[in-house]
Amino acid sequence: MNALTENLRAAPVASASVPLSKGRLSPFDWFFLPARLATRQLFFERARLFSAIAGVMFAAVLVFMQLGFRAALFDSATRLYAAMEAELFLMNPLTMASFRPEQVPRIRAPQALALPEVAQAVPVYLTQASWRNPETGAKRAIQLIGFDVEAGAMRFPGLDKISDALRQVDAVGFDVRSRPEFGDIAKKLADHGPFEVQIGNRMMRLVGLVEIGPSFGADGNLVMSEVNFRRVVRGRDPSNVDLIAIRLVPGADIQASKERLKALLPGDVMVLTQPELVAHERHYWENATAIGFIFGFGSIMGLIVGMVIVYQILFSDIANHLREYATLKAIGYSNFYLARVVMASALILAVLGFVPGFLASIWMYEFVGAATFLPLGMTLDRAVTVFLMIFGMCAVAGLLAMRKLRDANPADMFS
Image 1: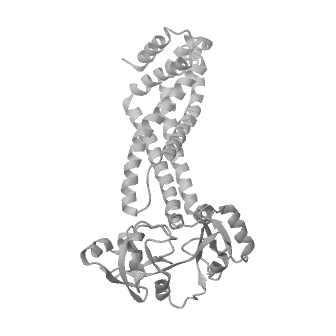
Image 2: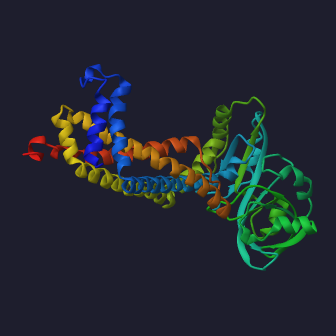
C-alpha cells in the first residue's frame, strides 16, 4: 500500500461523519481531523519520522542545557549572599562582584547601630588566598569568608555544629561542596579528626565542614572568625571590611530602615536589601561578562538548528505527497484545512521530540551537576518554557513549509 492510498483512505474516513463546512465543526473536530491525517502521514515513513524526532530532541537538549548552565551560573554566583541571615547590607558602590569586593570603612557598622531598629551590624570579610592540598601539595585559590560566628549572620548548613570550634585560634571550616581538586577533606576529617592545612603562608586547623558550593568566581570556600581572617590575611587595614550585614529588630520595616540608613550614612556605602544584593551580583554575571550572552546565544542556535531540521522534514513530506494534497483539494478540502494538517504535524513532532529530550536533560543535569558541583536541576517553569520554545520552533518550521502547499493545484497535477 502506497502513501497516496493511505492518505486518501484517511481523509474520507475522517470526514465521513462530519460535514466539511467549517462553521459546523466542533473545536475538537477542527483540530482532531487534520491531526489524524498528519499522524498517518508522519508514521507512514518511520525513518523520516525518527530523523525529525532526533532533530527536535537535539534542539530540546541543547536549549535545556544552555538554560540550565545559565541558571546554575546565577544561582552559584549569588549563593553566598543568599545564605546570609540579614535584612540589609552595606556595600561599597564600586563593588562589582563578591569575588572582587571594594572595601567599606568598618566604622559604618557602629554608625548603623545608631538607629533603634538596627539590632546588629556584622562586618564580613571576603578575599581569596592559596590553599595547599593536604594530599598532593598542589596550590589552588580558595575563597575566605570571615565574620563574627556568634552574631548569627550566616546560615550555611553545618555552621551551627562547628560555630564553637571556629572561635578557637587558627580554626577554619571547609566547604564540603568545594571542587575535588582541593582534596578529599571530608574523608580525611572523618578518619583523623581536625588537622592542619596551609592557607596562604599560615598553618590553620580545619575543625569541621559547612555546605556552600562553588561558583564561577570561586572553586571552594573556607569560613572562619574575623580574628582568624586577619591572622591569615596580613597587611590588610583592619579598619576596612568588604561587606556589613545589618540585622533588624523583629517587625521592623525593611524599606523604611533602608531609607533611614541612606540618610544617616555617607555616600561611600550603598544600602541594599538582600534581594537587591543578590540582583546586583546577578547583574554582574549577566551583563558585565560574556557568559550570560554566550548561553543565551547557544539556546538560539539550538532552536535554529532544530527548526531547520523540522522544516526540511515537513517540506520534503509535503513535496512527496503533493499529489495527495492536490487530490484532497479536488474533492473539496480547503487550503486552510491542509495548513492545519501541516501545523498538526509540527505539534506532533514537537511533543514526540520534547519528551525524550526532557528525560535526557534530567539525566544530563544530574551527571553534569555531580561532575561540576553546580546547582543544576530541572524546574517546572524551565520545562514549560522550553516546550513553548520547541513548539514555537516547530510552528515556524511548519509555517515556512506551508508555502509548498501552493503548488498543490489539481489542474496542474492531473493535466
